[in-house]
Length: 446
Image (cartoon, rainbow, N blue to C red; front, side, top):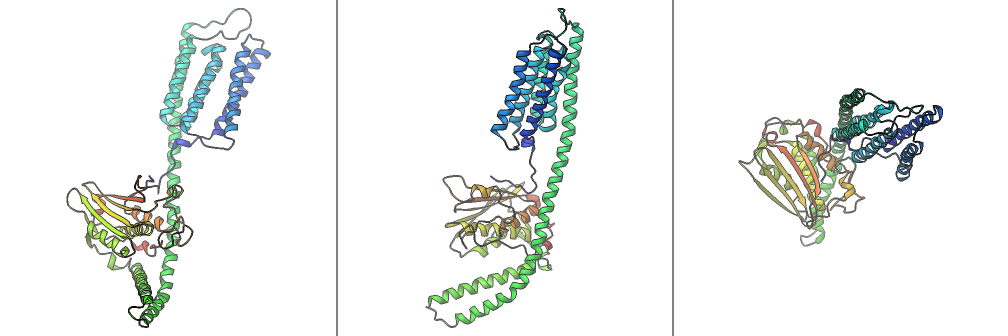
């Protein structure tokens, strides 16, 4: 299903790039290598060099494997990032076990993976990693090899000092993780708000451009349509009633009249005719939306049901034109039947438009509702001919402006075809306040 995505901004599920974790791990590998070399060679302290360097080499090989598997700069899922950060905690715990546990001055590096999680992952994974780091610190407080120290005498720490280090580590871990998460979350919210604003502005720019283009087109089309209609009327008198060519001429006249009616309605959208608070029921709305699409070889079925009285609202050009575009699309792609139904209760009103055609392709489902994305139907069944790919974009935008939420999906097997669900809060439909339709003029494109 494709839910209403007009203002949806990508969540934190894939915020972290694999390359970021790999680079941080290379930095850790370099630091760990340098520290081991200084302690074992520079200072000459007794250190389990073989085991320690094996753990460092394991991190290096993990980085090499990850870059071979995903050489491009891909973004990884939260689960994958959490697993890698969990490995980093385990690897650091292993090094600390070999080199003195919490007595090692580098013990506070256990917090580093948790800080990365707090700034890039969700609270759930940050809590899991924080718990893992706390458990590791607790074990290292009592289970570890001796701290590397010169001479034969092992470095002994008073128990109270070990407890103090553990308490300080755990409290610092909790405070810093919470602080980092709060700060990063505010930054994420701000970035999401900016991205949503950019999406809104982008849609408004598209609509503004279409508005001028469609108004000019409506003006320019008036004269040639009048000429076509006049020629069709004259030609219809040239043929006998039983002549098959007369049926084609009558079809041309009918469609020319329909085009003139569409242009007339476009020019009157912002006039007083459509700004009066004319009330209409849901059944009247569906009939007005469906009626222009009858007689095209596709059976149009309607159904109405719900709890309580039928919703009655103000005549709204945005709703009529938006639903009209969706019904037209269903008729274009239906094999034999299209269904339009309304369902309501005390809280919401839902209009469902379904057809028995091939449905949407999977690649189209991910882009449907964007401007200039098209796959033409009955008027030219090939996917490369015909429209501008604006019908769904305009319909979706008009309906969303009235407070609707739109869900687009294919019907579940064994049924075929598409299903579009448009849902409003019932109070929005029944209110006398209307969405200003003056900007809609010229948007009836397909």
